[in-house]
Length: 301
Image (cartoon, rainbow, N blue to C red; front, side):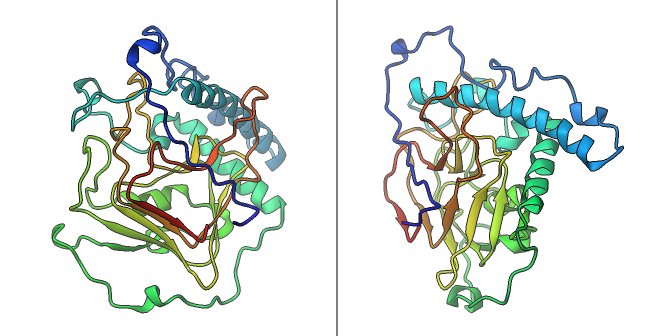
């Protein structure tokens, strides 16, 4: 196992609802991420880069501390969905990835700080020509998921750069989600599979990659790519299938016992730049956050 990879699969302990105090809400709304001053980045005077980065850092550090409290509570007080195939009506209509639940200004700060710190560490913007992997050049098939539905998805096709400097979070999540795939309000489905491929490179992310149902994450086995959490990272895991719905009292995208048909292989997951802001406790964002693991595969990580 690569030393850079802190591989931790969060196996969710199922507790009776009665054991979790009904009045306790552990989501971004109750813990104040949405309560930050509106659009703090908009108040930055563009006098120089130092002024901008200082202002962005304050936004990120405040958000990381608040997210740390959320993470600690989720570890200590896990909840489960109701035993239905669809989420409760209270969460119908809520949609989007993890970053959609954060204020726009926080997302801007995450990207800005991630890129600034990556540049300051002298990470290369370009990589030498890599050894190709056979999956890149083969003819890719299709499934009955509708005209034009893509099973094979190269993250660079969706805008990822992989230079260790650009924030690739949004591009990778586009590769995961495009095509009406099984995410929130789905439950489970085998109709829309996807193989999301990472060519060689370093992919900087500032919030979780959401691994949708029936999804394989595969890297170039000849020269494994790195998925690197930025110093501004906010979330519970770099790769996650356990997605909490903002404002839904701990409700999640998928039933906790239903984590099937997922695979991660041929990648390096680097968490070394992520600060531990969880109140001094020995809990940090995981490399992989799955609430349970059934009919899944992890290899060469």
